[in-house]
Image (cartoon, rainbow, N blue to C red; front, side, top):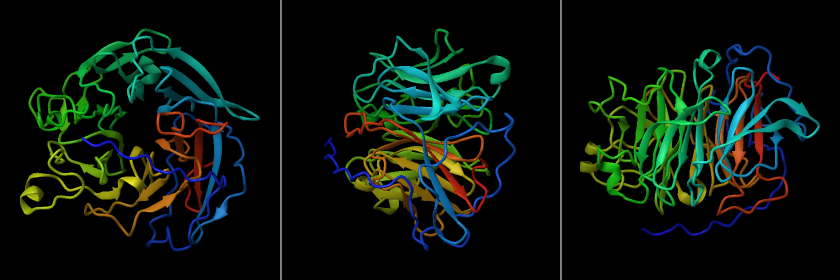
Length: 394
């Protein structure tokens, strides 16, 4: 398998972005609805955007501010009921608490604990994190991490020892997956990679190259598509970002090999074609066997990791492509108009994308990883507020 060639980095330019007037004016594709009330109460106090927001499209503005800096390869982001975010650092194996308190330089960043079992070599380390939907009752957090022998999922209370609930997910220097999130059905989902062994992706008995669905105890849910199996979908090369829209449709980002990266609409039991297909199917037989991607991009423009849904838009954060892609899926399973890129080259490699309780979008950088070119403030967590449509109240 060929390794990708390094992609030239764009020079850092400005901290806010000007959107082309037509770029996001595809019917009403960028008008955001009013967010639901915040169950945690009033949103935290955020730092002022670094510059005034710039006009983008008709009645649409996007303001960008840096919430935190000086992090080291932040990977997963999940919110607690009080509005604070838990952020994992891949290489240090630390869980950080970010906010809700703030100071002159942004939100307060407090280390919570370091997981000693984590082996952070290669692309492995402390990856995804998810907060229990019943956190106020059970105070439970779930993490996805690499050890020397496998990738695994564990549950813990903050400051306590992790208890593994799923072990034996294939581990390698690359393709470790790592996404972790509770779906709207209350079940826990995890995304895995093929661990550089292509055969894992088509082997239902392997946990590699899959999206997994489980109960909070790590058991397969009774209505999973394969009996007594954690496997929800298969035929993936390396999935990291997973997200759901208001209609409970699931989306996932996927790293291709050298040509195409994908965003997929995930259906239970569906096969997404790796290693036989990279990107879109080329033959009728492949189209009959494998699910077609929702969007494909050249790897130089994408290599997307995190995913989040903001109103009708799917936002995916890209590493090699150094941008945030906005995609508007249609009810029929297609895409309305053309995906639009934001932040291209502004902050370097983008890793995480998470919807905050106030409706804003949090995006993390990954410039301290092996392929990055970190600046003095890296790594950072960036906040995007889309105004004119109601996303982001503060």
